[in-house]
Amino acid sequence: MRKRYKWITPVTFLILPVGVYLFFVINPTLNSLFYSLTDWAGYGADFKFIGLANFQKIFTDRLFRNAIGNTAIWLALAMVVPTVGGLALAVALQGQRVVNTVYKSLFYLPICLSPVIVGIIWTWVYNPELGIVNLALKAIGLGHLTKAWLASPDTALFAVFIAWAWQQTGLNMVIFLAGLTAVPVSLVEAAHVDGANFWQSLVKIIIPMLRPATVVVLALTAINALKSFEVIWVTTKGGPFNRSDTLAVFMYSESFRKYKMGYGSAVAVILFIMTLVIIVLYFRQMAAMEDLYE
Amino acid sequence: MSNTIARTRRRPVRWYRLLSVASLFFVLTVLAIGFILPVYGVVVTSLKTVADVSFGGYWNPPANPTLENYVRVAGPGSDNLLPYLWNSFKVTVPASIISICLGVLAGYGLAKYNFPGNSALFVFLVAGMFLPPQIALIPIFRLMNDIGLYDTLWAVIVVHSAFGIPICTLVMRNFFQTVPDALREAAFIDGANEYQIFAIIMLPLTLPALAVLATLQFTWIWNDFLWPFILTQHATSRTIMVGIVNLTGQYGVDWGGQAAGSIVGSLPTLFIFVFFQRYFIRGLTLGAVKG
Image (cartoon, rainbow over all chains, first blue to last red):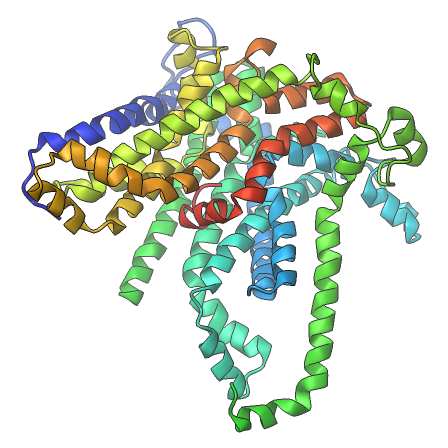
């Protein structure tokens, strides 16, 4: 790197992007922290500074506790279903054979759809009369199990989750596939020659070597899970009886439907802190791996 | 693997291998069909009349395939989705270009000048990628009201331009780091100044990285729902995803129309999926932190 340059030169390159970023990304983020300490309604200019009252209220709010419970279930499922699914698909479909390429494209197709479209599509999948789920159950003689999946309190959250995971699985598969290209084929073949079966080489070689990809997948999936809004909004709007109401949806409805923007900001701050925990864990893992590999 | 020892050791398990490959193939095929079934349902329904849906159901192939749903929701002269599609283009194209330009500037400044605090600034800029949009929702809603951009396409353009900076900076900084400094040195000796080097030597080299970012940014911004949902109100400033959700509420039982609308709204990103998949995947795995 050339050391001699005027100090003004990098500034001319950086001032515009950094300025826009500070004003439209960092400034609103800090403002949310401020609003979370007020009782602003969302319209008008007058609001009071009420300290931590919103946060005190949060922990006695039945609806908030419901939303955080749903978010916890959603997050726990997200750490398992689309990650294990993505890994399994990546291991099964790695390589350049034509069949594999076609299958990869199929599993990857949902990524390029808007979550809005995903929601609409799955609304039909779950439709009580015409949806494929109930039709299939009837066809195999399990007609008594049919139900309105998105409208039943017991199944709504899980039904929406599957729609969301449908998209996330393909994304995770793509990342695992990229990670697998770093696993030398010769290593797996050498293990095979030494008598290792598929499961042994998977557990002893492939999965340990996929650690960087796994860290990325877990962090990305967790963050996407926390902020996912569209699929839930389009399918159930958090219902029935708030049974699929996650923090992201709760934050929206408190702020923009009930016009409690101070309170909504406090919910957003909680969501932000949860994301922050994931980011810190992610960066620590990354740093640990750099020590490991360099 | 051509040595004889390996070959003789493998032979006894060959039937077993064949069976396991066949069963893996079978399982994958069933999975793939299940995976793609929802998409199949949308495609066939978009080709059916209302009567056809109520008579033959949702999942059967259309008895008399028709394009009337497409003509109705997005054909010439239709006021259902066509204006929203146009709005989405008016948002997505400028916002993609602006965010990429800002990322090119920041990426170049960070990759080629080793000033104090360089890596801290890099982490600071890229960290924005992890922010949940919810944390900025209310203040940006207020800000756009205050500066008079609420309910205009500009509000959405500005937000996406700014929130695209982290990913664009990450990709461009990593890209510029791979460009050898000898190229700069040579140009300096030939008498070029910093900005000439940037514009004449460096920018033309960025094409592959720009292609990666263009596919990523176009897809995210086109598919986004939350920001235009929050920042716009009237039909004149609605983007396609907000328009489709609105249409869904409006025509509760018009499944053919909803299906056709969903497909039309996905065509631009499907186009990227088909023709620029290589760049898009490279972007997904490179900046794998954004979803």
